[in-house]
Amino acid sequence: MPAPDKFFKYIDDNADTFIKRLAAAVAIPSVSGDGTHRKDVVAMANWLNSELKQLGVDTKLVDLGKHVMDEQELDLPPAILGKLGNDPNKKTVLIYGHYDVQPASKSDGWDTDPFTLVVDEKNGRLIGRGSTDDKGPVLGWLNVIQYHHQNNIPLPVNLICCFEGMEESGSEGLDDLVRKESKKGGYFEGTDCICISDNYWLNTRTPALTYGLRGLAYYKVTVAGPGRDLHSGTFGRTVHEPMTDLISLLGTLVTPQGDILVPGVDDMVPPPDEDEKAIYAGLDYSIADIEGAAGGQIALSSDKVAVLMGRMRYPSLSIHGIEGAFYGAGGKTVIPAKVSGKFSIRLVPPQTPDNINPLVIDHLEKAFAKLGSKNKLNIEAAHGGKPWMADHRHWNYEAAKRATKIVYNQDPDLTREGGSIPVTLTFAEALGVNVLLLPMGRGDDGAHSTNEKIDKSNFIQGSKLLGSYLYELADVSK
Ligand SMILES: NCC(=O)N[C@@H](Cc1c[nH]cn1)C(=O)O
Ligand SMILES: [Zn+2]
Ligand SMILES: [Zn+2]
Image (cartoon, rainbow, N blue to C red; front, side, top):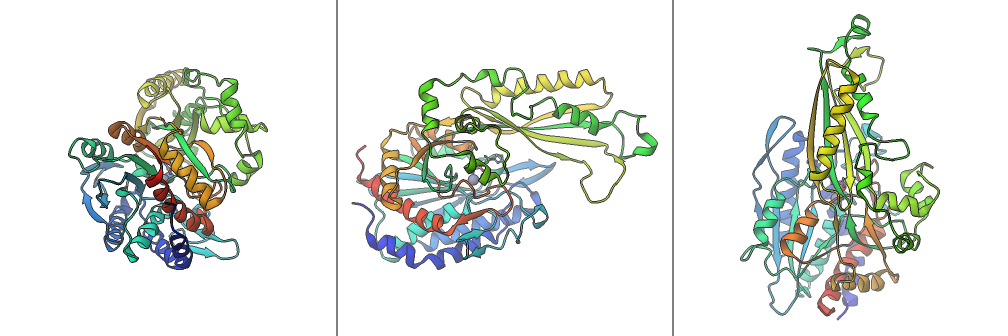
């Protein structure tokens, strides 16, 4: 049975209430990558847990232990596990999402306070950190549950929830929990399929289902030498400068055209055949889409297939920042004593952090040796995850295709995502079931960026899509 009309009407009628709930979630600055915000991440867990409980979900908070971040030992935020329904005649779907967010501050270039949801009625946008990644989609599930709870209607499937607060910082602690709870007698036992809403459409007009994610290998490379920051007038051309060494090293990693210079990394990936290229050629996508989403006319190629393959089926290396460098206003003439460059590589099959790390470390050590510097080099392979691919001909995808057609009256694009959600592969391997990525937001939402938004229509239609997917799941033959 498809989702009833009164479900769709309920979502439309309650849009303002749902937006208020999203505003309350955005107001909690649950930045997992900044230790000073850890109490906020925990506050967000408590808030979400309490909302779920009020909607009749049987939840528990799971302590994931401690970890060290920036030389400080911190409690990991809890995972929230929940169950709704336990009917042996229904399918059981596990939904995953995250309640932590990327850092954001007005000084990064936001037009408004990132933690105050701005309802831009003129453009139909809800602007705030986490609006699309991933508080909006997580609350989309709550919107669906609320309709059933308030109307005393059972869900068409049994639901198991797993929400975490460390996704943006390597999902620490979660893999062990997923493996433990996937065993016989564990919390996730009986799961038939998984749905994750934590990525984006390719463009701004075509809904998508996603069957692949790139993996990630994240690095911190530190160069240190002087005992303290130095005056460049007194010490310039007198000592080996850490910043100069680091810039030289970072310059050996990738070309401005995106080719990865670490020997062996690009070569590991087999070239596409003509059939695969035809898949990319058939996607509803243009150079204007990528340039619109990037906010500049800066695409690496004017060939749509080349650009899509760069995002979906090739690795990429990005340099993110330099810790310890002078970056403020004014012209401070300092030689920083210790600087750390941060970069990451998005991985595609058959690449994994285990087979990429030795190549990167070997390359950096050789490049540093060539500099002839007396400074010291330290290389840290920080968090990472393997790439993931799923079978998009599976009934889980069929249910989502039908739901998309019902809600949007369109067939979805079938995409591979350039980003990473490392726990996806852990779920797939530990439970041995199909995983579907069902994005809610658009390609120009600006996740991780300034002025992150979700369109109001995507939040509302996306909530309908999640609900409709559950009804189609109940119907589809296994
Ligand atoms: N929406 C998924 C997402 O944004 N994932 C992050 C994961 C990550 C890893 N390190 C920091 N964040 C991504 O960057 O792809
Ligand atoms: Zn993210
Ligand atoms: Zn996310």
